[in-house]
Image 1 (spheres, rainbow, N blue to C red):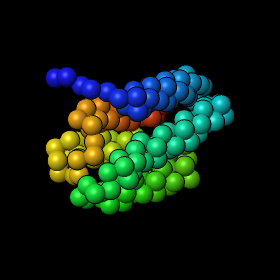
Image 2: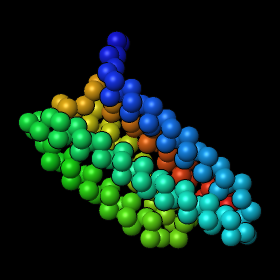
Image 3: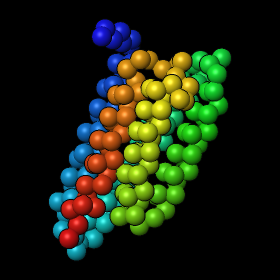
Image 4: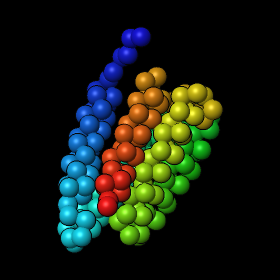
Length: 155
C-alpha cells in the first residue's frame, strides 16, 4: 500500500509523537512516585490535565477535517462527537487524579472505537486520509494504556 503524506500529515504525525512522549514521561513519573507521598498525587494530576488536553485535540482533528471538507455528508456528527469528548475531558479534570485517569483511559478507548467506525465507513470518512483512522485508533489505545499505567501501579 502506497501512502502519500503531505506536509500537514507529517506535521500531525510529528506533533502526535511529541505529545505521546510527553504523556509517557508524565505517566512514568507518576508511576515511579511513592504512593504515599503528595508528589504522586501531583504527578497523576499533571498527567490527567495533559491527557485531557490531548483528548480534546485528538477529537478536534475530526472537526478540522469536517471544516476542511464541509460538503462531506455527516460532518456534523464529527463536530458533535468532538464536543462530547470535550465534555468528558472537562469532567475528568474535576475528579480525583486516579478517577480522572480512569475516565481519560476509557475516553481514549472510546475514541479508538470512533476511529475504527470512521475507518469502516460507519461514520463519515470522506474527508480523512486513508491511513488516519487506523493510525489514530492505535495511538488512542496506546495513550489509554499510558493514562492507566499509574492506576495499575498503585499498591
